[in-house]
Length: 221
Image (cartoon, rainbow, N blue to C red; front, top):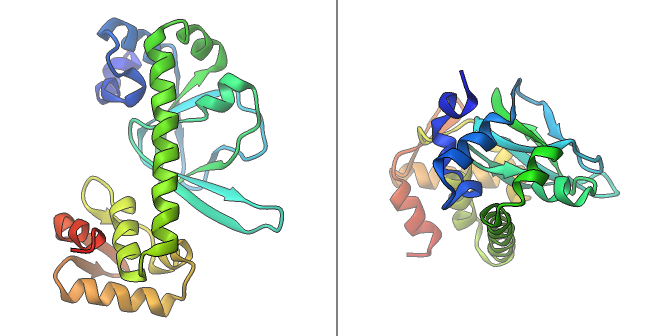
């Protein structure tokens, strides 16, 4: 089966905005299907790439390691998001590593296919829009990390980590690492959200009960 038929939801990816159905299908069908187990490094910081990836299913954690070995988690990319396109176009090493969180399925788009697709002005525009969106997202998160109290930041982390079923697979320790604070502080913040009926904690796993409520909390309402 053609990949475009196997993953019809990818036609709605930001990379394909305003493109014709035939152009989208041709692009997706020229990719290579890769299924990776949890913990697989799909793109590695400091290494050149052979192409970009489109996430068809699952989640990839984007992280950056500095010269001292400290790791910062930048983003959790999900279905329809692209990774590595700038490195593939520029032939520069990856700025960050992308690692699967749980089993994931990605489509690998070789550099040759991506380069040919860039002849389409819509692909060029969409790549720039994706890049601009990342800059905006990173700026907003930097502001949040520097200015928001812990309870609001925890709301943001939960909304970011939750899957389509409103479940957060990551542990409280993982969230503490995101927030750069102690496990005890995270547990207190989560307990407050649970008491307010916004989340449920079951055997160490978190389920969002009220996304709108968490969004209001994040906004400071």
